[in-house]
Image (cartoon, rainbow, N blue to C red; front, side, top):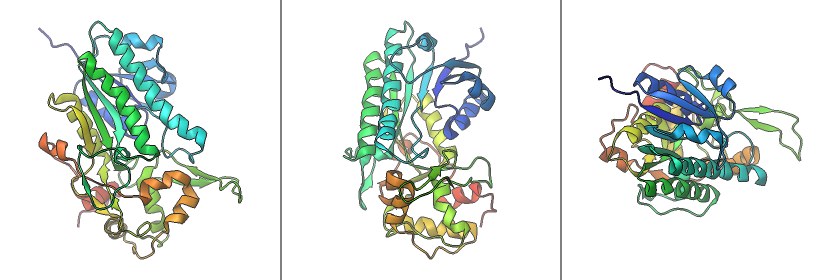
Length: 338
């Protein structure tokens, strides 16, 4: 008898991580069902999905029936942290796009006769708040700042699935090192109508944190951000996808799972490696206040450090493809290994 193809529902599938994830899921034989606000646009962007379902980050909708009998749900949807400066309105969107969407998915699971076996839900190491040199694994307590509160609220909504018998994994992602393709890390910002009252900075949501950090190096002005002593908990995008697949398939994966590489670095250490990979000096620190002026509150992701380690991933036997920053950066910038 032929084995039934497992259906996996993915939200946030058109994002940088989601696109890579859908391709890997299809290659592993899953039937990928994409939940998206715009199915036609998603269909043009994604070639590695079997079905596209119109979905909003809401508590109810006609999409709910698609969860019936699904093997798993990977929920990555949420307003992009790098898409724009954080006004109060956008901060509400960051929170509500995560909590309402997750609440709706869990409610749909509750109504399903055959419930999904697993929910892999997005989160971030922002859960822990700012720390100094303290090493943080999945047992560390939550912080109190805005991102910490967002992550806690998001995780609470997801953990409601546990009461339904759905194994739930909370993927706390670090600073993702990524590029659209090897050798290409896009420019992170554009300038539009700048003035004293309106800086006119438009963030490129496809670029991510690496492009922000690499931009000064392109002009031979690179260096650490702020004091350089704060910790940077990074991860290559391929390992993010690998860990999401681990969370989906390994029955022992449950609860929080740090999606970070095993060797966090200080900003100074990271900038030294980045400069070496790019063939640029790393001598000019970027003042933290300048980055805040340029980007607004989103800059806190780079100016406040966290020393996060992937204890659970290592316990579960995950083998990192890029355990060191040098290997990760050389791959992304398409340089031969030293």
